[in-house]
Length: 279
Image 1 (cartoon, rainbow, N blue to C red):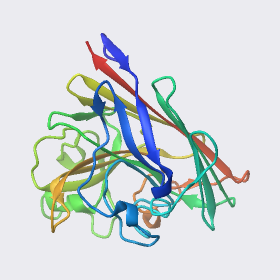
Image 2 (image 1 turned 90 degrees about the horizontal axis):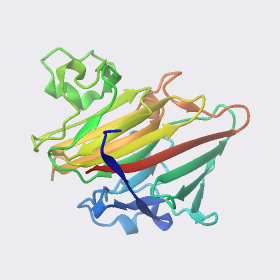
Image 3 (image 1 turned 180 degrees about the horizontal axis):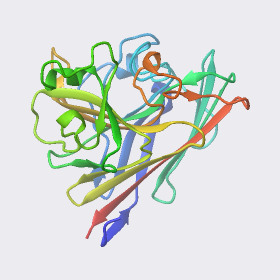
């Protein structure tokens, strides 16, 4: 933590009726969660196309692929007690308890499924950031670029048939990813492997996201859309996504690229989000 930075208390709000989506992450007069332009989020039915309303979406058991952004974002969750929401699907049950009483947001998750069940989970957080913001992660972290990055590389750079190209953070394959500058018409996704803690720095403010989970692959996914997506009406959106697994699409995940339910039939994990501001 930077010397002279003081903690900023965060408060969170979520909408259990509409996919458990986090609708607000606020502190120190700042709203951290971005709100998207797409209408119709409240009218979504299961199997509908994803509606990019912003906030933080719970993506499980995949992020990309089928179904897009997973199974749980488009379904109603039920209350499981104070701060707790639960969703039950044929192959798993997910419970989430969020607290912010100490000014630090803590989300505790429990997934119950048959032993051997493979999944990817991401806290798909779209953040409201300035063009001066940047993502601070350990230099050299292996980072997987996903195929939309191929158009930004010299011809012939992309390995034919591979789902990703790996290079060191912050500039895998020479693409500088840690800065969120002005819109340039690009959009790309990346996954920072074995990276369970990152900081978003925006002016005097710092947002720290940390993921704890024993025995499962932990990553941080990045969606850096600087006005490059969607093709029929592009806008700006920045996603910083703590993740269990190492691939956006469960279908692409190799043996060590997905979380796997152990013989106990349960996986538990914790997401902690805190904020600081320089004096």
